[in-house]
Amino acid sequence: MLPEVFAQRTDNTSELWLQEVTFERGHLYLIEAASGTGKSSLCAYLTGYRNDYSGTISFDQQDISGLKHAEWTSLRQHSLSHMFQELRLFPELTAWENVEIKNQLTRHKSNAEIERWFAALGIAEKRNTKLAHMSFGQQQRVALIRALCQPFDFLLADEPVSHLDQENSRIMGEIMTEEARRQGAAVIVTSIGHHMPLSYEKTYRL
Image (cartoon, rainbow, N blue to C red; front, side, top):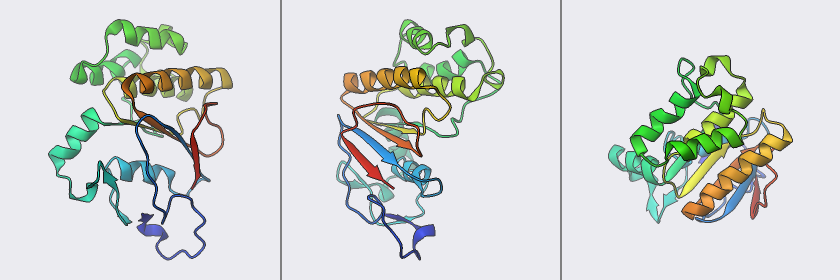
């Protein structure tokens, strides 16, 4: 696989582009990348939001390029959760509403479970605050909670702790990996430097 925009490059040293790589459920991966090397593009390819690449991506041995809209909808509801680098939250809604708008669709988590995550991440008092009035680091914590409010086989977290301190990064990592273990799922984390202090089983350099 290679982004079309990189097709004319002759200096490829990536451990992912133009390589055969397998991500398996139940494992923890880190993708380290310099800015502009395509880590957000990779996440978009794996989740079907973009297809401007050459090569093949398969999910359970099925080429994803042939998936229909309904099949992608099902995958994103049941198998693929994506915490976007730019978060894609609704600034006019409160922190709680941003999480509930997804959880009401999935019915995957109880209010008590979500409240425990808000408390553990230090944003319990912000649950009724509109996102527009929260810092980016606080918004990242809301985005993680939202990403966990669904069943998944793979969780893609694109620079999830870029605006968090070490302690909050640690807590976020614990919550993320605990939920992934509960579901037998894989976590794929991208980073351009600062990342969660986790026991990554495999690190790829993009």
